[in-house]
Length: 345
Image (cartoon, rainbow, N blue to C red; front, side, top):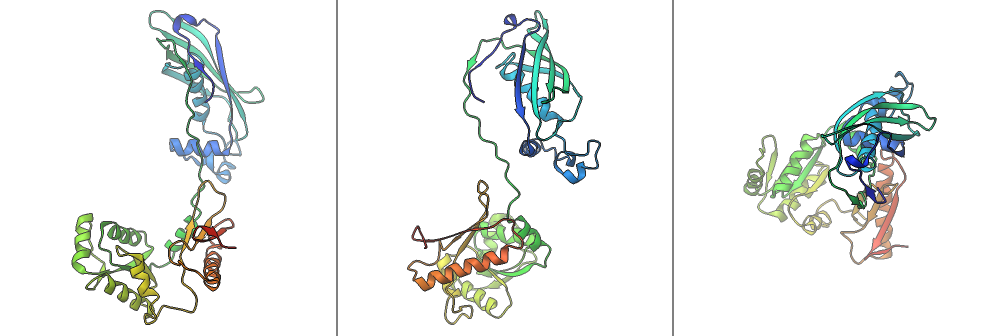
């Protein structure tokens, strides 16, 4: 909303006064209205479904058009301070994505003594066809207002999460056996329960049993059904998790409430059984809503003083991960290797 808004008091209006505004409606407007209102009727959102409907195509929510009438009343005539009391609406024609709608109100009656105004309400498309007609009753503002509205927040329709297909495919498979290492905090316990209940992982809790149970008590959850591998402390928990992974009894290691370097020390130990010839590296797989592609950022957490050979392995690790994800994730990737904040060339 831009420009200065000035309202009209009851005594300043006369029969026949008009005001209007024009809006173009596209697919994103439909999605945003559905998200805000909760109206997910497939007649508005699913082209395949709508093709078999009475109009043969997706149509805009009727109340989106009606909302334009509200906007005229609240910002044009009578303007700021107007109170909506009643609205009668008839939807004359469907509004389609791509239409340009002109919403107009006209003063039809001034009800003396009550400060009320009755207005005819009409919306037309770019061909001049009436798509909405009706009548509104409003309470006119009682104080003169000249108002410069601030910038409204930008409304952005975010696409479905780019990783959602990956999650859905994982749900369709049997849960993966996972070692949750030293889950001795409320958040670690709740995380283990969440991935179990989502059917993604089958967690084994590894660490001091008393601390694990205390964390569950703090979180107010039950550990029924969980297997707990008792260890004396976090170092021992990391070593035990690596041992289970090396012999194939778990497929995934999940960090609990211990430090990353403590877990990784066990993972890269020459005697742990997981170390390979390639340099281990860390990858962020990111979904940035305002950016058109998924983003892979590496290595931001593990490697500090990297040689050229290390960088080769780091990049190759990221490429292998992307190759594994591409069949599931739509869109190409941006891969951004960083060394102390500077791009690797």
